[in-house]
Amino acid sequence: MSTVRSEKEAVVAEVRAKIEASSAVLVTEYRGLSVTSLAALRISLRQQGVEYRVYKNTLARFAAREANVEGLDALLVGPTALAFVEGDVAAAAKALKEFSKANPLLVIRGGAVANKVVTAKEVEILADLPPREIMLSQFAGLLQSPLVKTAGLLQALPRNMAYGLKALVDQKEAS
Image (cartoon, rainbow, N blue to C red; front, side, top):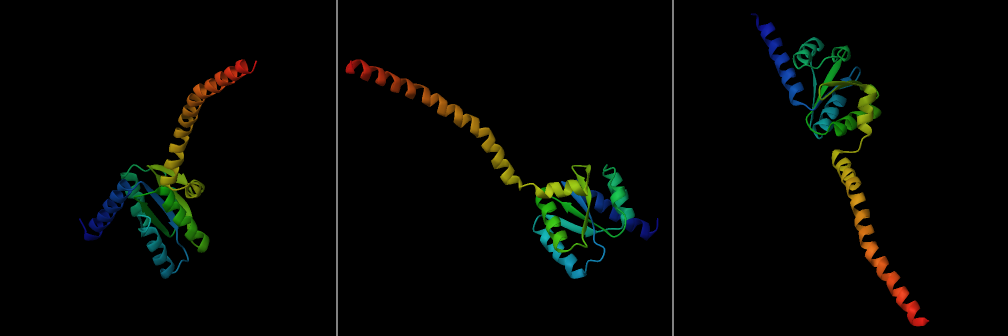
């Protein structure tokens, strides 16, 4: 086996391992971006727990197939970079969206979230979601709200009955 082939197989194995370890893989087109812009993007994504790498499309396709992510092939055309998300997918999508607004040459093509291929529009919807912690607190508030109302109603029943009895006693004493 030639060394070139073994190097390519090593790259495919590396990409497959990153896809399998990631909660999402977002695909972008970086055509026309300067090296400094790409470096700034990598730094901003690294703060979100995202690794942003450029691989040969053919090798990335092989790795996606081996990782059982079907449909990613159509996104891997032209100058493509992969963002491997290990943390909050919404935060990573938001960072990419904000960078693409500042640098319109960066195009979000789509990706794979939990081995399901998503379109660029779906990635933008993910970017508009609040962070995970806020969503969890909103959910907890939704669960807590009916319980608080029920407790208030249960406390109001004896209180209102006491007010009614006091009014009845006051009325009897007045007559």
